[in-house]
Length: 193
Image 1 (cartoon, rainbow, N blue to C red):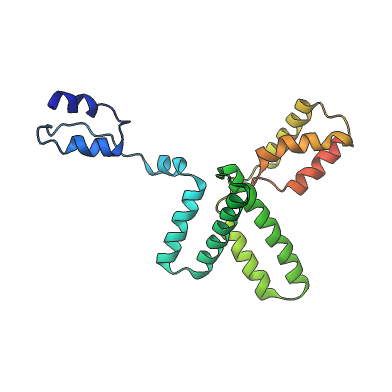
Image 2 (cartoon, rainbow, N blue to C red):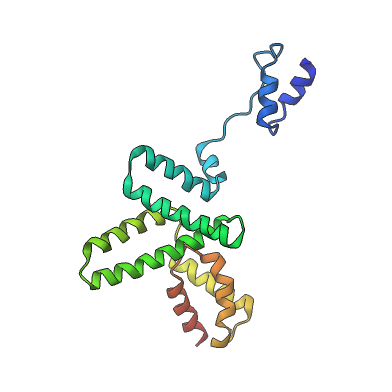
């Protein structure tokens, strides 16, 4: 009835099906409150990284962006393989770790192709890196990296090189996709030496 529908109309957390059901009531007045749509920034932050990648694949298909589409499909295949192998649903952190690994592989390939004077292959790998990098979080600044290293050393109580593994274990989840871990490793060595 109207009272029941009106009471539920105040609840913006109702399910989509319930919302549609209540809106079909002809007795509901024109001032029936409807939850305002989320701004684009909120929708983007609420969307999982995997969903964003999948949406980008559809967009690339429609735009016939062949090279971009190929890279995104490679990424999705890598994510699917990880989920199948480990029988898990990947979190955004897991996906960032995979992307970081793919970027490292391509950096190594660019170095090898450049040394072999294969600019065409190096350019292809570089183009893939550009697409993959879009899905990484904002890179940490030098000051932020140093602050995180200092905090990790303090938290673990590391006092020498033999405890470097403890420090890296703390930092990897925080820095995945946001810093070059090889460079971070060098900084930690300098502090613990």
